[in-house]
Length: 83
Image 1 (cartoon, rainbow, N blue to C red):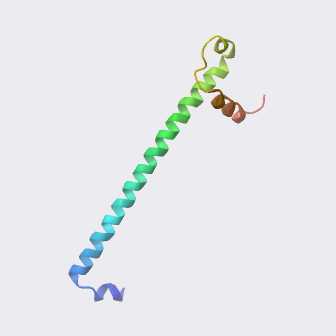
Image 2: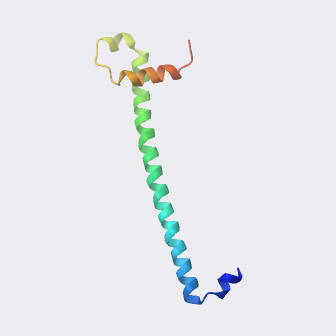
Image 3: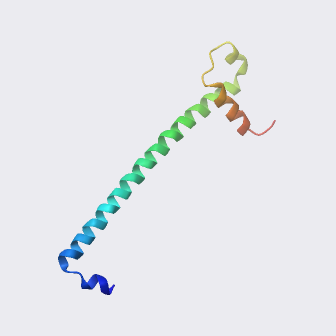
């Protein structure tokens, strides 16, 4: 704290402005990361919904093109509790 009081008013303002700038950079990085997480979660939700739909009607799905990749279906089936 004594070091802060040793700074001139201009130096204190510069330090505060620099800290605010770093804070904004951190917030921008956080927002970008959260957007990426949101996008991935949306993709997972869509794939999961399609896989559940496919699992609920496998006899119809045999006659149609699979709505999702087989790997996704396998991953979802692994997550389901054993019946």
